[in-house]
Image 1 (tube, rainbow, N blue to C red):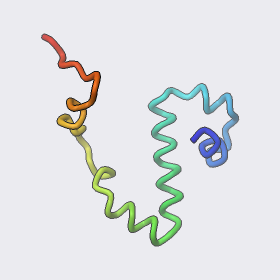
Image 2: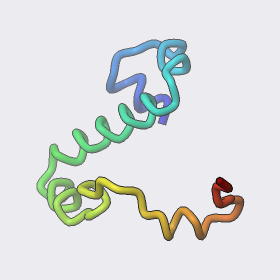
Image 3: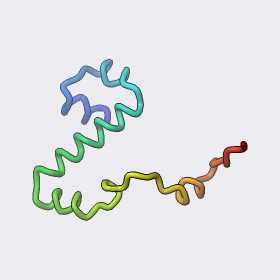
Image 4: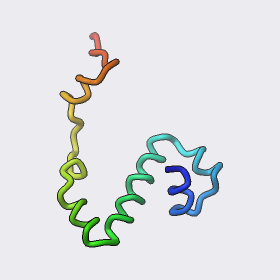
Length: 73
């Protein structure tokens, strides 16, 4: 993923490593989407992928993960 992001963004290794994690993941997602958009098969995959249009977290799935702790108020 780091090499892919370096290649696509033209950033140096150090620049990529200094990115905040959320920015790194966002750039990675978008560059991968741009790659998929280049082919008909990729565009079809993106069209059929419901998670890309999801705007709210899947709380049930998150709560089922090991290590999840319910917030105590």
